[in-house]
Amino acid sequence: MGSWSPYDDNGGTILAVAGEDYCIVAASTRMSTGYSILTRDSSKMLQLSPKVVIASAGMQADAATLHKNLQIKNVMYQHNHARPMGVSAVAQLLANTLYYKRFFPYYTFNLVAGLDAEGRGAVYNYDAIGSYERCGYFCQGSGKGLIQPVLDNQLKAASPLLVPAQNTLSNLPLDKALDLVKDAFVSAGERDIYTGDQVEILIITATGTRREELQLKLD
Amino acid sequence: MKLDLSVLDAPRGARAMEQGALAPDLDPKLAACFPLPAVTDLDSFEKEVVEMVKPSHGTTTLGFIFKHGVIIAVDSRATMGSYISSQTVKKVIEINPFLLGTMAGGAADCQFWQRNLGQQCRLYELQNGKRITVRAASKLLSNTMFSYRGMGLSMGTMVAGYDTTGPGLYYVDSDGQRTKGQRFSVGSGSLYAYGVLDAGYSHDMSVEDAIELGRRSIYHATFRDCASGGTVSVYHVTADGWTKVGGDDVGELHFKYYPQPELHPSNATEVLA
Image 1 (tube, each protein chain N blue to C red):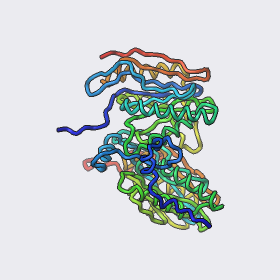
Image 2: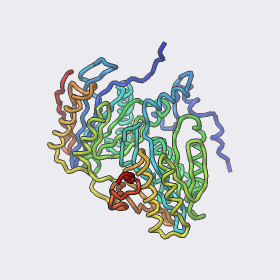
Image 3: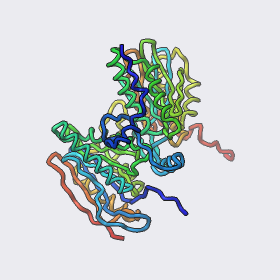
Image 4: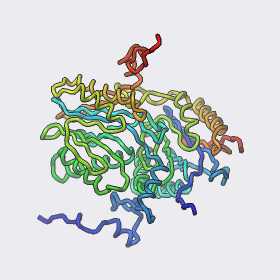
């Protein structure tokens, strides 16, 4: 008899790109288990505030619970502070929430994306137990090995660790970055069985959040 | 004076569960309380978990005390299995303006527990009216590590700082080990770093030479260890606190140290010319 595991990987890819005054977050909407497709239009993202979005790849049951818990804490914060959470606060909150399940982790690979206090794009990437760092762009999930090198090639900026400091955000304009994101997903959809169907894209700017949907192949 | 003996009470986690209180991470009063999965074989489960989630790993870090204070040098690569998850990880954690902690092993474990150490150090300052010593800070961390011993935490850190007794450097790891010393290197690339560090070290080095030694040791470790790379960051700790004195890309350092790559010592010499 095989042994039962509480974990399952539902596949899918997420990515986020930060710009000078925008942030793009995208997530594929296919949810799978093994070789079966469970649904073609599930969302992996949670918008906590007009300026902050969380996207989670990996096990969607854990992602759903994680998003629920984060929303609870987000609402409590807003009641206590009379204002929405900033992106750096959400980033730290998610890290702590993940680490408190250090011995029975959320099997989720997360990205926090939004605009920081100065209006510049911010992306934070996480491992499953909560280690995090701010970056200019990142992707997670089943297609990350296919997409990350492309982003490195097109968007690579200087490391934030260099002394003297150099600019770490790519200066690609919003429309070019959006085209890159769409191309990346189309390509990933060709080579990753778990990426396909549609891509949900949220574009966060100072004026608010816009939603776009990209159709991918259904095979 | 009334002594605070609350530390001898029954573990708060157990009590809270009985009373059906809020889940540990929603209840602000239960700090650092970790629920465990209700499985018969915890060790096997935790092993499986590590296999599955592959927390970020891999590194080279080093630290040494010399005449003019403490030098800390680290790389910036994080790996998840064989995938390089980041080349820009901050492996020096700035606990407070006079204390630094390094990151080796599990990134989340290091980040979380060193942030927790920073909180404890701040509480010490408020309760005692003075800054904590490096000796005491490292002990707080090692005691925390010891209490989670055997549970799968992975952390190998150096706590470095400057206090009233002078420069301090302690190695603390997740087995509960705590060792005071003059020179340490920690991580998958530590053996390579030790070779260069031990050969070039002298207590009376100038500050410039010490910084360069730290930088070169990490560079050589990134050259040979596949789990180390990215950017070398160098910090200098003195009586006035720490400053970041170097941040160099290892790829650029390679060509700076070996401007003619074809003459690099690692290249094979042709037997049949």
